[in-house]
Structure formats: C-alpha cells, structure tokens
Image (cartoon, rainbow, N blue to C red; front, side, top):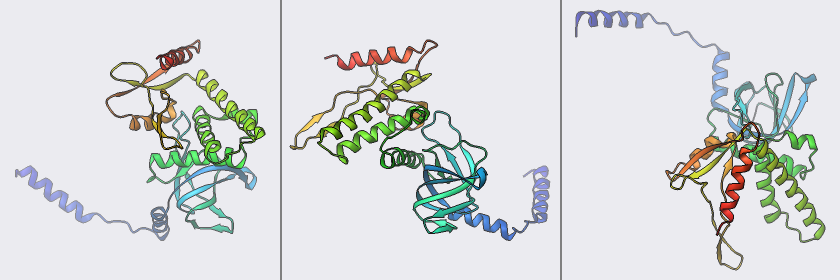
Amino acid sequence: MGLFDKISKKKNEEEEEEVVVAAKTPEEMKREQKAKSSSFVMGVEKILPVEGGATVLLLGKMDGAAVVDSKAFISNPGSDVKEETEITILGIQEEDGEKNATAGGSVGLKVSASGREFRIGDVVYTEDVTLESKVHSYVKALTNSYVADRGLQLTREEVGNLSTTDVEEIWRFYSWFIREIEKDDSEEKKAEQATKISMLGNTLCRKIMQADYIYCVFSSLTGEPYMLSRTVKNDDGSFMCTAPNVRVFTEAYKERMEEVFKDDKYVIRKIENGENKQGIKHRIIQMLRKTASP
C-alpha cells in the first residue's frame, strides 16, 4: 500500500468515527413500520367523491393488507399511457366502519382527489406487487363492475371512454361468462347475449381501427403473423383444434406480451395506422385472407 493510500485510509477511518447517526423520531419509526406491514393490490370498481371533492373513496376487492397513512401507487394496466402515481392511504372503510388495516375482501380506500383522474380498472398497490397481479386485479375490477354488477348496461359515453384493452378484456370475459356461467337456452336470453357480444365486438373493432398503432405477434421464420391455435377437449371426450388466430394487442400489454412470446420463434412488430388511418385495416384484411387460405 502506498503512502497516499495509507493517509486516505486513516482519514476515512477518522471521518467514520465522527459520523453520528441521528435517532429516528417516534413518528418516523411508526411510518416505517406501517410501510413494512402494508402489502396489497386492489382493482378499483367504483369511485365515490367525499368531503366536498377533496378526497375520493376507491372501492374494490383487495388482496393483502393496507395501512392508513402508508404510501401506495396507482396506475391503469389497460392504458396505453404508463402513468404511475404515488398516493397516501388517508383512510380505510369496510362494511363495519373505519379501520386502520384490512386483510382482504371489499373495501374503500380514501385518497386525495388531486393529481389524477380516477377510472374503473385503476389498480392501487404497494411496490412489491408483480405485473401479473396488477393485470389480474385490473381485469377483475372491470368485469365485476361492468358485467357482474351492471350486466353491461352502459351508456354511449361510458363505452366511448373505455380503452381498447378494457373492451378486449370485457369481451373476453363476457364470452366465457355466457358460455360457462350464464347458460340459458331461452331465445330471449340468447338474443340479449348476442346483442351485448355484438356491441362489444363492434366497439373493439372500431377502437382498433382508430388507433395510431397496434402490435402483432409475427413468426421469425416466415415473417408473417404467427398463427396460434390450441387443442380443446369436447364433451364426448374427443379433441379438436381451434381455428388459427393471430394475436394483436395495444401498447398497454406490450411488456406483458414480450414476456409471454419471448421464444425466438416469435417477433413482436408494430403496425402503424398512418395518417389516413387505413394501415391497420389493410394489414388485418391481409391476415384474415391468409387465415382463410387452405
């Protein structure tokens, strides 16, 4: 070791001895303990203004436990704009009144109304929550609010305010719901279900066609959209392959789809709509023609 190193080492040791760690105040220690005990994720199913609009109550089904005065984050997995906002949990309301914490179930989180425009499908969470958990809570909030609670009785304005990904997830869930849960052979019920499916399908198509761009999964081997199919089991025990489909998605799901289709045989490409808003339409027509080809 050289002389400079020895002098520097001695100087550092002297400085370290002089360092005094400031004691934490009881309030700081309390906040740290709250942060450690708060771990949760909750999709927002309803938004209620309270106290003259200064705060709002975000209602939903929570997984985990939240603590009053602790920090959390809020974002919307279905939005193409990635905007994560830090918030403070000002209060927690359950069916039996105000509490400091909750361990699951339906709750209301009181937060400041400033700094963000809240939407159904927003997700409130702590920093330890995974992307998949956020997406799961987002989908659960959408389907609980729009399908389970309201039976897809939406105004024209509400439908217009849904994102493309919102509509896709609601359409996907409702298709499964009427097939597996809401089984009804009456002609009246079938007509009602068909009307709702048609509304969702038309809305989804319109939003895709109006988008600035979308993404599609391509084959790295052929350079064409990758044809995806799956094998399903019939009621009689036999198996069949579903018709081939291509996978398109919005900016909102790009990160998630990059993880799903990370194999080298897949390539994710952006399809631009162009100034005339015809690019996506023309590309999808090409995809449909190839899908229909023998």
